[in-house]
Image (cartoon, rainbow over all chains, first blue to last red; front, top):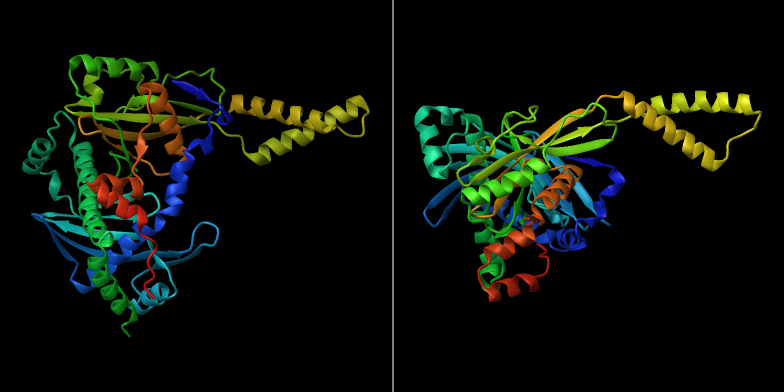
Length: 199
Length: 203
């Protein structure tokens, strides 16, 4: 156990490199979410990556940002009344998606969460139904994770955590391979621009 | 929002993979016990942190089988926090300052006397307050080195990193988007291309 005087912890020690990298490279993850949004609108939200079919849609809760921490402009859009026009207008003003709530379907599993692009922290991971608490599924998860003697609630949590980040990595990797390839990215950029400018 | 609540929030970290066997498990367990949470009613610190069993966070005792599950180590970080409301501190400070001035016949306290008085009152009040506990679990897959800390507030993450380093002797690496990208791109050429891209304008 440790007793702490708050002054004993150097809160600035969060290595300057990490803080700098978050600031300098924030655009990569924002472009990823923006790309994902446009693709989800254009391709009915279905991605086939290797053997995994991922269906996703964005909930009506988005934050869009432009600039860095010194000259940041933020707009939050919430609620069922958000129109595509509002999102297009924000994108046209140079903003990109920095936080979004995403609903995913992979096989039988359906769940949702909110992701922030500055850190890739994920909040509010929650199953859409409780179907994964029956005995068969419990055994399936135990075998899948090779983890035993853990109660059902925690087991489901570990499974969802791993699944969430596994799927995010699949999607992020797909985006990165396009983003670093000049020719492929030119095609994607055109698709995004056309969608943004569609009236 | 943790493993035992309705929804989960998490920050992801990476550490070096560990090959786990009984000896390694015991070695890690001993380190965890050294920094486990112990109730101490005489404690008057603002913040006290320590490891607890995730499914029974208010018990001081736990065994290896309570925290190791195959390749996983699942622990709770307990953070007990005492705080003094500023209005309360102000009330007692004004009362005490007035009494001192009346007794001493002084017109005002010096800057240093004010600071010392405020600190003394703060710690006297702190002793009388009860600590509010907060539990945040972490899930560590030892073989892959993937680790999830089930909280996303920066200060809480910093408490976690602080105690993790003290306990295990190394820092968990926060998997921010850039580090995630580097780990996904499997060639030096790809990583070099990633470093050379500039922000896109979709206008």
